[in-house]
Length: 151
Image 1 (cartoon, rainbow, N blue to C red):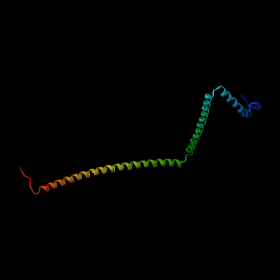
Image 2 (cartoon, one colour):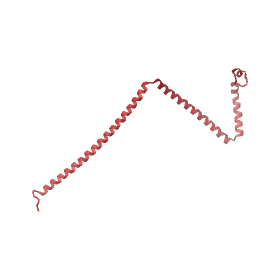
Image 3 (cartoon, rainbow, N blue to C red):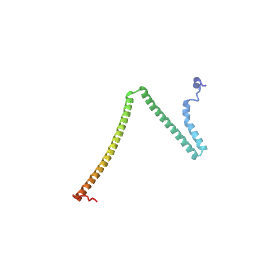
Image 4 (cartoon, rainbow, N blue to C red):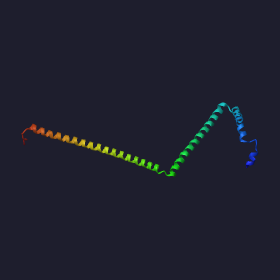
């Protein structure tokens, strides 16, 4: 285990020296990579690695944002904001009553249609009876005052 006193005594391995040596390390590593691995294989590998890190950072940001939103919702629940809860319940009740009214209106409209059809059927039946009565009257008129012959 390295103590803080041992870390301070090491003058060669410091963050400052590492930062100054990173460009040289990058150049040497990329030269060795492209020297021993052909371009048509090496470039796609580097591209995949880049895409992988991009996806990873995007997913991390998405999770952080999701946690942040979740925390806000949780805080609202803990705070017990009654106004928002009442608003939500009132909206749900209003939606239910609207649905019930619409169903009632549809049912009443259907019943009106059925009654209208029944009345039309009765009118047609009555009009055909009236026409039959007229036929009887015409026969009587055409017959005149003659009586039926009995055999």
